[in-house]
Amino acid sequence: MVKQRQQSKQSRSHYTPVIIIAILLIGGGLTLLFFSPGFGQAQPITINGQSITDDQLALGETVYETNCAACHGIEGEGQPNWKIPDQNGVLPAPPHDSTGHTWHHADEQLLGIIANGGSMPDSAMPGYQHILSDEEMVAVLGYIKTFWGMQEYDFQQQVTHNSN
Image (tube, rainbow, N blue to C red; front, top):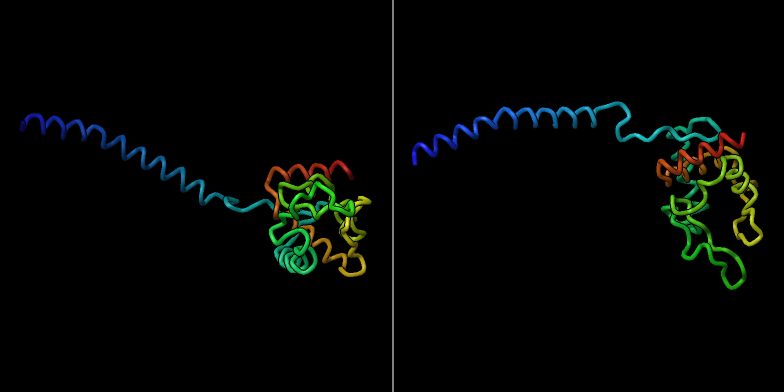
């Protein structure tokens, strides 16, 4: 019995360096991951190639909550059944998040929709060119982009680039 315990103790001691090395490798990898520049930070949001500042995003959030959230939802989720016209033939407000189609359009087109209203005949979206400043429209578009995932954002940036 004593010999069996000694053998068990010896076999465990063989694993100790392996366990220590594994912990160091995992710990080192996590340290690099969490403390690497850019971890947890999205790439800067741009409108027509111009970076949007944190102050502009804060303005955009205020403008969105005041002018857009009632129809498009506080989280950009849109109205239910947004692809199906209502009894008057008008489409409900679409989502601005990744489930919608906003990210399929170039910046200039989106700014035009904000300024002039929905571009489809069955859209109820009003134009904001006489309500919002150009700065506010750019800020709200920047804020809307925060609802998208990275794939949608990258796709939309390519669409914007190709439209110029």
